[in-house]
Image 1: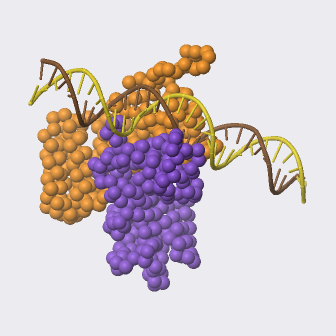
Image 2: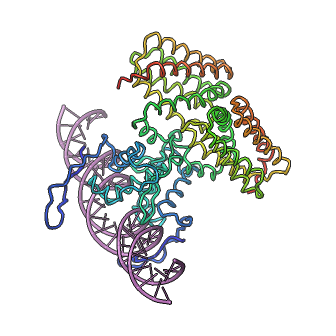
Length: 259
Length: 259
DNA sequence: TTTGTAGGTTTTATCAGACAATATATTGAC
DNA sequence: GTCAATATATTGTCTGATAAAACCTACAAA
């Protein structure tokens, strides 16, 4: 679990036992390079290294985390793949301007959600949902297959019968993702991570009142119904209504998060 | 430029001069690992290795491309960062289901655009633009700063005065990206790659008639005007109209591409 | 003074070969 | 047949060396 294996790591000559432990946050089963990518990525998104800045070089990371250069390199390659970095010989790894970042990437999004301006982040995600989801629902109403409809209805029903808030949120996520899939445009699929991230943030923020839950459930069922009846316009409107309801919850309680 | 440097690559004992050259497509200045990531990524998106398939192992790639294992590993890490792959010891690198792919990534998108179903790809991109851009224009009309407006107007004007089709397309791209930026939602920015990709595909497909160009220019100017006048509803409508016009061009001439 | 050019230096890029960790496959015991 | 121990193949990590690229410096020439 902990890094710094202290294996056969005896420097030639003197044995310096003064090097700092430098814990690298690790999740179970996650590789070292993944942990490093997470750590550096988080620091970049968080703003520790503003765009244009040159990161510490490989050797430096290698010694601060007590890992090999190759592990660091692989981590850096991952961040390059997400356009957070670009690196060239002699010049080092430079943080790219934020316009280049792939904000819709799952990891980048999660780092964003962890950064100080979490609240602004949630608002941005919510607004984005307003832009995309009503239209997606309309398309879903027009093109859904029976199989896709079953998935939507199933998730909606699970939402209603879920006993824990966590289970409800999970079903909620499935519901909205199923709609995206039913819309029949492949490019909508990656946006599922936004819904996931948004609902998860919401989950942390609020514990809803029973009345809120009842009302929200009705709004969801209305969406399900209109997609089932294949009414694009009404499905679009129903989603807009649901999102407006979520907006209220956010502005109403976002002030006092319960983290 | 060419790979296979044939340096001090003399195997112990016999010298086998029978190994195939195995050219790896390289761009000027691109590193080996980047070239490998491109090649493997393209093959995956193209469908050579369907989701669920296990890729050849590191050693195999290493010898087919005549590069070191580390170069291959770094390439694979990049593809993992885009969720095209996941890999575990003993089992190998397995292609992830397509729902996991980050389709909105610049590279993945470009691989998609190179794959056989290019036409379907273009249609999907175009439809996605219908979903997002009208709303983005409405937001831009409501929130643009004077500086952002100058950028939009500038690009629009350049479109009108461009002498080559390529220059026009470049200005066109800038125009739409500027609108996305002016909309004031950071999550819209990464969608710029879609516009880029879509217009570029379009560029390959059609050489427009002069009348088409004149009409398209008017439609763009109408968008510019409504954003300048800060009329969200009219801006939204103007973008829808432009996209509908583009649709016609695609269905009208998409049948006979001029590649 | 300015300009060009040749080295020197720092950093990433690539290579090679070893060992560790892990998940599957195989074998053996009961 | 079931379960546990062992073998095996593949990625993960480490080390240390060399190559290539880009910036910096010093110096020479116009």
